Amino acid sequence: MHIVTVAPSVPVPASGGGGNWNSCLIKYFARQKHRVTHIAVVGKHESNPVDPLTLAAYRQMNVDVQIVPFQAQPAKSNLADKIGKIVRPAIEDFWPNEWRTRPAVLERLDLLRPDCVLPFAFDAVVYTHGFKKAPRVAFQAEGPHINTYVNWKYDPEVRPGWSPQYLAYSAKTLLAARSQEAVYDRLTRDLTIAAFAGPHYVQWAKDRGMTNAVFITTPVPDPVGPEWKQLRDALPPNEKCKILMIGHLHSTSNKSGLPIFFEEILPHLESKWGNENFEVHIVGRNEGMPARFNAWRKHPALRFRGPVYPADQEFLSSDILLVPIPAKTGSRVRILNGFTYGSAIVAHSANALGIPELRHGENVLLGDTGREIAEQVIRLAPDKTMRRKLGENGRATYERHYTEEEGGRQYLRLIDEALAATRTIEAEEMQATNR
Image (cartoon, rainbow, N blue to C red; front, top):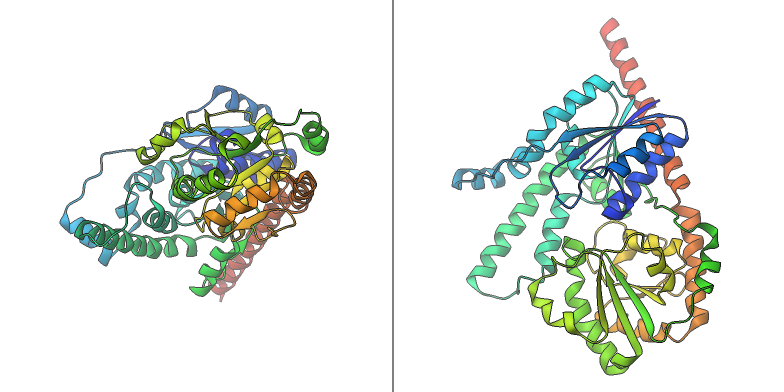
């Protein structure tokens, strides 16, 4: 079977959550001896350049990587355009450059003649929209309207209030989110199967009358394998409790966790525990952290480490993996990454939406507020038995639901369903023509 995947990059785990599951699925399909072609649309994000070593690794697996340049042009907008986005929202109104790139992707698909097309993430849904020569099975976290809403609700650079400026900003943003949702509805309906990384998004689709939406777990790599316990036990104990926060600090979801960390969790840890008893290692790009939090760069208990790859030793040597993100989005991949290393995880309860297997006290400790999260950290830090229990149960959760093999099997089943549905429709159309 010829599977063509489409994504806004050449997937690599170091690039973030999408890179994790994109690369897992591509590798699995290749191992199953399918013909795999990956169309990478590059040039939209400077932070995701094409790495020659990554290209060579894919080609060694017999994955054909084809590059399509992103067609970017300066945005143009006038009052009529702005009104049109609200009254008659269209794909090209909100994502003009993605729409401008789409013909080149469709032309490439025509030449490749795939059996199935797999758009990874929202951009790829736009790039492949309207392709009818093979079923499209899309895997995505959430629609763009969710990110717009999350950015409005949690953006640390915007202070809520009753000022005319803030009210105007809120009205503009929420109207945009509503229009984006209407466009996203049309894009989702056009897919053969919409595979979501969160049951709540499946419910969103069902509430709107769609029948093509399914939940699929998010596969992530297994960097250290079953030796995770021996590797963790071989490391010397930390003099202070080492808390790991990992992820670049300029994405919408990651920024949503900054106020709760700096203004709620950290002060509570200071007052109840004392700075001398813990270190928080903040791993990942941080140059995009809002200036509002720059004063904390010199905090005695914080270590801004920057990007670290591979991050194996950071996960294994940390006593606690802290995920304070309150945004109600899809699966939080760093939690799944932590499961692979047997990490003891403390997280905001919102993350259970995208990972329904999270169980408080079994494979994670959850809190609804910054204060509750801080209390869970303080409770867990001295309790080595509890940390080991959470780590073992988290690892078991990963092995049952989130391995590369499980994700790949789920996706191949969806592809088979999509192909069967397409054959049924074609047969029905042929019968109708012959009548």
